[in-house]
Length: 111
Image 1 (cartoon, rainbow, N blue to C red):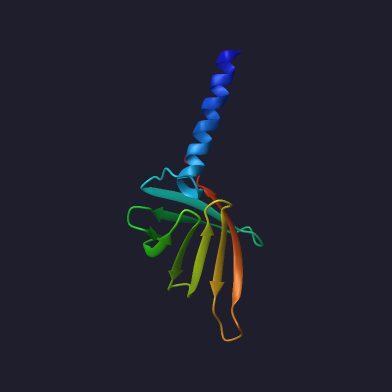
Image 2 (cartoon, helix red, strand yellow):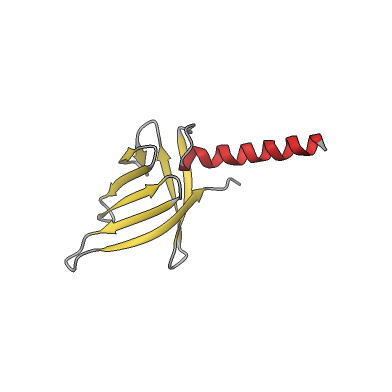
């Protein structure tokens, strides 16, 4: 029974460590991969966050404990990732006032 408790605690610690790297823990990997899903369409895409270089997909980013934000000149808008919830908001300007697109991000599964 004690062995089972240690196994469960070990798995919980491993899971917490993996999510902590990308979405809100103090420990950070040099590069984190996230899978983001559009909350309306279900379309998915990958993000690469390089904490050492302060970039997201090679674009300069502002990284704080709470948020990561960057501008994507190709898409013409700004992204903000809430590191605790995994909520990603894209804000695009337009001649009609602009629009928002919402995504949910999680640590990418390997393999």
